[in-house]
Image (cartoon, rainbow, N blue to C red; front, side, top):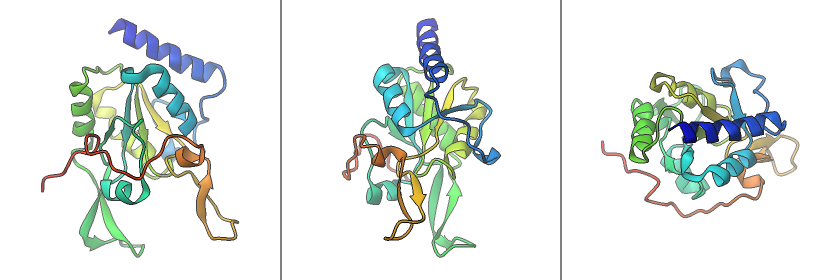
Length: 195
């Protein structure tokens, strides 16, 4: 346990000390008590350097993954928000999404299955880095984790509003950084929900 904690601390210090760790988001709602932020590229590098000593969690809804793709670099999908096919979003023309009441338990189970403890670094990543990144990290606070990293640019990156094709997510993010990506779902990383 000491070696794992020490190794993770070295990686975190190297990222922060070298100036390559991502800055804290400007929006306070996108900040966490840990103050640990990575870009998609930094998350990839950390996972490559530390392998199974880091848990990398895709917090997107599996239906979203089915249509937009994912990466096998991720260890597990534990959705922070779940689509409610019986309700419309109150402000947008889309289906409602509700917080997954089993999110923290799902992450805890993934950690336990891998023999990880509270000092294991956990990386959470959503589509854009903002709407579900920090909230999903904050939902893990009751687990007493010491290192929860939020990927600030997400899987699809930020929107380019001035693009002639429309507002496309073409700036930064995992996909736009040329990192491993596939449109086939990995059934070993996305647990089925039983209603």
